[in-house]
Length: 365
Image (tube, rainbow, N blue to C red; front, side, top):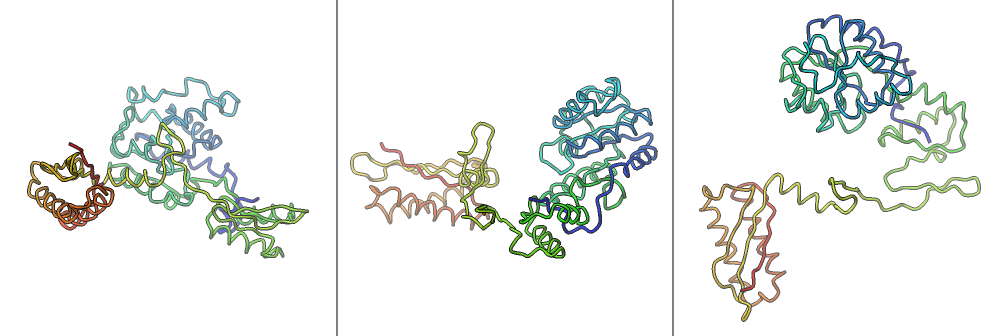
């Protein structure tokens, strides 16, 4: 099983030592400015380089973000970051210092929502305030698949706030990937000489590039398994064959429960967050199953009721028409409910261009 994320990049991985001078030069050119550096939270060697450069420029280190703080704590305990405690300033004390005397190592290099850098970029961080003309260094890109949009969003926020953002496309030697590239991957494959190959950790394009790469070493395509989601490989009698496909699905974690929040629930939550909810309450006689009284409508997060009385009145007319057409079938209220939801949904979208979550309830009186 081989990492294949770097299979589309020619050459060999550089050493981390090639980045040493980069941080010295960047810090030297920004002597009077606030500086934030974001990198992968587990990249201890990168943090070592940043701290060394900071000390050389008489700056102290602020560890911003739980993942950064925890990893540095473990690394210090193991002796990989042999710096005294007076090199560090606590995050909640950072704004008590002159910003030109600090270097922030901050989590959020992949644009993770809610990360330290994301909150700083939106001026929502409780301990760090972004100064005008600050320097923000991304020492992590190029990014893994699927995060480019989030990274761009954070970079745009930072730039709009007046910061100078430095990243690999405009500054050389900012990041050395932890993923081997074609030269590294070819060397490992040639030395190990496995019977079968399973490329992992990349997209379909990366897997196919890996297959073509080992093909140049004489490996037949039948010996490489490009596994898609749910596919398996069975090893029997020294041979590998494609096994049965396993049914897989997303597992959602909502803070309290794990695994019981399905896609439909998430869809409803998304609809509620964007278009609100529209609740229809229909009073039905317990004795003869007819509508008695006035249909009530409750709306939240959809329209401001006091300014939308005409819209709600027309919606009520739509509901009453459906009820009149189905007055002899109210004992099958599930069917009537579906028709009301459908017609009201069509009406509201036509009038407002929005799709609130529509809930229809009957109240027996």
